[in-house]
Image: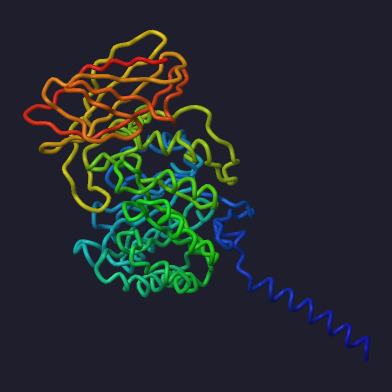
Length: 462
């Protein structure tokens, strides 16, 4: 009897083990997935997104940007797509995008932008329509689970009735799984992505529980709602304390005091192992959020310098996915030609003036500087100055004199003072030291009347 019981017990243990093995999702076979708070590759390696948003749907010809973003340090690119609100991106185009991501050893987050601001923007699509778009692309998405994350819909609810987000999101996740998608899913918050009414925060568990594959990561977009370090840490603390997976799917930079504290954001993301994806490489109708001037990788804006080369930026913190071998590029990418203006992130704004580089005075062993008008509107403008070191420098000063009465109102990444029509800009603590050939940029807002000519600059350095 004892022997029979022992044999029976052994059989039951074997059967139980086989059943457990059968019902446990084989995530190792389906690529990127969630474990606790982390995104993990198929081999179990934790992957932290460090990347850039790219507005592919309006700039489909800017394919060279993928190599440029990789050279800037990105391990992930979030690619803007449309299923019909704008010119639809076809299966062939999306397949090419995936191949570009893979060729440049970046994880591809594909997002459907059609849903932006639903409920407040009458042109926006529903999340259900977004799922239909992904279903139509299933033939080029299946088998790419190691490389592709599906961001079902960008900022899917505006500020009108954001409570509808929960049910719509649950239904979208379940419909994706019913249609056989095994991919890691990314879910954006309502309130144009910023969740200032805390609908995503307060319903996160409901949304995560809706995924039969337990393979969903939540995404917060951080702009002016998160203008203080305390607002950033409080939001991230809430998710971390509950063990919920979260990425910062979009964020801008602090070009004035009312904008997101990008330095605190990147520092907190690095300390917590949270992914971040900055908005955006280039192409905004208001170029204040462009990381490059006209898609030129050799011409980083102040925002570009911060996210690429700054503390806790891409170069300092990004690690390549092990599915690509886990190595980083050592040479800069090639730049791409510019394209025409496109829609902005959420609301239209005046198109920028063409950037106009100024003449500069070269001082051997010191530095040169170029001035451009990044954007202009009646009575006001945004200026950018790029400083390049001719030899290693410890500090620099750029001066110019306006001929047409322009004035500078505020600046970032430099200490700017004015005396009459003469303006002086000195480096701040983090961008004064430059190696030979290295560059940095600073920006400012100004006013003008009648004419806004480009001044001649002088750059001196120690």
